[in-house]
Image (cartoon, rainbow, N blue to C red; front, side, top):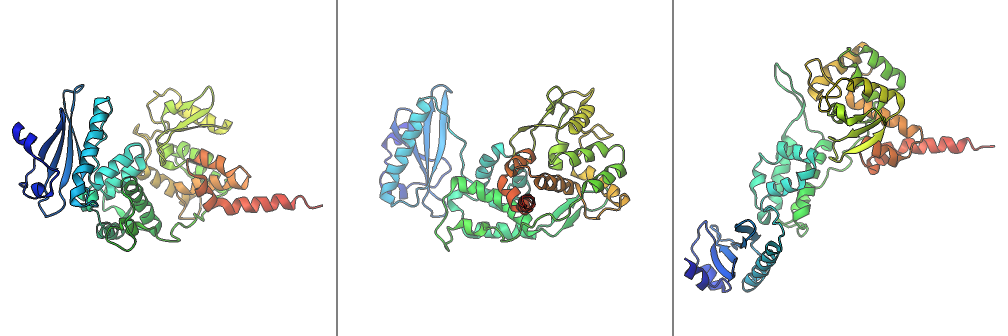
Length: 391
């Protein structure tokens, strides 16, 4: 086998065409510890090039797929593959690390989601179990993505889960479709170049966002209404709801807080698990600090800051019932939810004239999002301030 590996010449197109289709690549030795392999396609494609380099530190071979170099003429593929294999050898020999192979759509998503927990959750729901996950990146076409999008749009959105009975679902909103598509588009953009417009290679065209889908949240609860809501909430959920009325955090981020996230000495709160995946630290005013200090008292650092009666943290399936009950009891608009409280607190901050960038940093979102959804309030505040300059 060693003699055959030495004798094999993959640089000649004719030699590659005569190779037997098999799982193990046909190897050509480039130099000591460095091999270039070629695996013919079973379906008449271009075939795949593979590099194999011996890692002395690990005492084993490192293997990396190089792709098919399908955009090059047949007589130029070997030179391009050889160059990549030699670059890999230099990396390994210098003590560098080979990144995980990114061959399929699922590989690209996992790489993108390494430090993006919210994206990983969406991939788990809509990509990894879908047929698109196994599609090779070099074989990805617009039709693959278009068919995935059609399946996504047809899938109902889950409103809530019930212990008894069927889950509550609704038709997937355009804004939800856009959010689900955005993470896949971002993941693929990291590893693929956009294809030529109106061609099958234009995978990106099937992921274009639905225009005008992101409407503003219009339901606002003023301070009096929020106070009535807290007073109408049962004693177990009241601290959690009150915290949502005092801080512009996402309900999920609030529920994920632990006792160790709050520093009573400095009145600082570290928000770790949130949509953007990046931890941030904010200074709390006295009322919020007192509430969180009381919740953290006598708890271990890893315990939920806001704890249910069973000792577990709140989640979207457990906070919905007490909030819905309190909304009814307080005679508030029926469609008020936990997210209404976040919207209401952000609205108050914008109306008070706090800089949009500061609000974005506190609430864990982008300044662009605050500007898009709340910029009109800032304009109103500016007009009011200018009006007070009248003589």
